[in-house]
Image: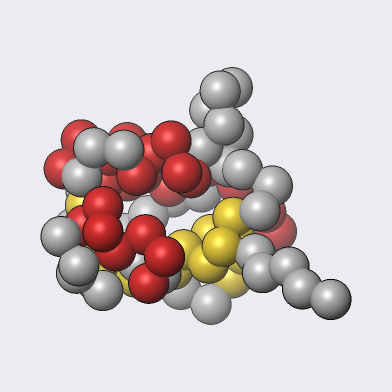
Amino acid sequence: MATIRIPSTMRTLTRNQAEVSASGATVREVLTDLDARYPGIGARLLDDRGAVRRYVNVFLNEEDIRALRELDTPVKDADRLTLIPAMAGG
């Protein structure tokens, strides 16, 4: 299972856990499993078309999945996904 780092703004959906585990062979499958384990988190990460929302960054280990194969990026059991919501300010 991959380890997923949950940002503080989404921890209410994971019973206040900062890290959780989910399984899958791709980022898409891991996020689908994550949503099955913690209902509602998927809607915060993916839009109606199933794409990662513009204001959410997903990193596999240290690399942005947008620079890899996006949701089709392969995931290994020892991998770490980090979810980072974009911040706005002014």
